[in-house]
Amino acid sequence: MDNNCYKKVAGVQIPKIFNDENFRSAVKYVPRDGDLYIVTYPKCGTSWMQYIVCSILTRGDPPSNVVDLNAMAPFIDVCGAEIAENHERTGPVVTHIPFTMLRPSERAKYIYVARNPYDCAVSCYHFMKGFIPKTTGDVLFESFLPKFTGGMLAYGDYFDHVLPWYNLREEANVLFLTYEKLKADTAGQIFRIADFIGSEHGAMLRDNEAMLSKVLDSCSIESMKKIHNDDPVERVMKLSSFSSSASTSGDEDRKVTPLESRLEGSGFIRKAIVGDWKNYFTGELVGHTKSWIEKKCKTSAIMQL
Image 1 (cartoon, rainbow, N blue to C red):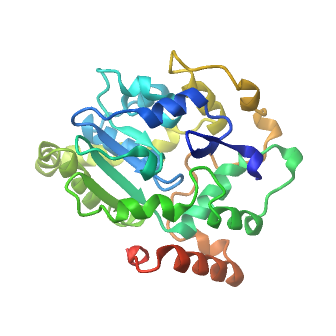
Image 2 (spheres, rainbow, N blue to C red; image 1 turned 90 degrees about the horizontal axis):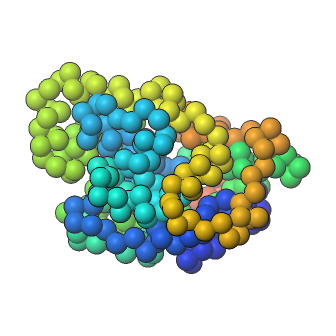
């Protein structure tokens, strides 16, 4: 899992298989009035939040396939801005673009999801393994972790991504959530999300218990696994073609290693649990990570969430 997996486009380190022009257009995208964003660092609940929001907006009847889901709630880093600019789009814009490049606007609302960095590291490890050719040899977690804490993966350092949004958590157009609270009280957090999107959505769920149950069921891990059962690499290539302006320049860098020739990765949905990091972190790795956290957080109370 070396730096050959990544490239820099528009000042952001991204997976090499991303389409350059699509990503550049995503960075340049200007929010329209009333736009709703879902922003996360990779593997912090992106797909789950995408589905939660779509389930709320559709009254528990979200898109049943990946193509329709990304038409409603496009992951613009891969799809490009063109699909987000479609006036018929009814859902949120989804992105991992860092705060400094995203340039939040008062015209839009932002849902940011953070996750315990220990669990995030483990989830990134399993996900990224699925991008690596078997010829590289297996990748051990202890060799992966320094790359995570060193900001050497896609989208850079975890805390550089999270902290600017944490510091804006009291802003009226920002809803800062944690993966852990979503797991502990999914219904309660869905009420918060619905209220944030629009008071009518929260009222609808409070007044209709059957509708709340339908939304909860539609965004359950079991339901999501039925949708997110494809190969991440192949999905990136498919969604990249959504933009009619996507350039094919540099496609030699985006050549896809066949699934059978890659290490086994987790796909989009793995365990979806809290605390799995304890099965991977030795005492030495915990010490390494604590030192990184102390250096990056300093006076921030983010780790007390």
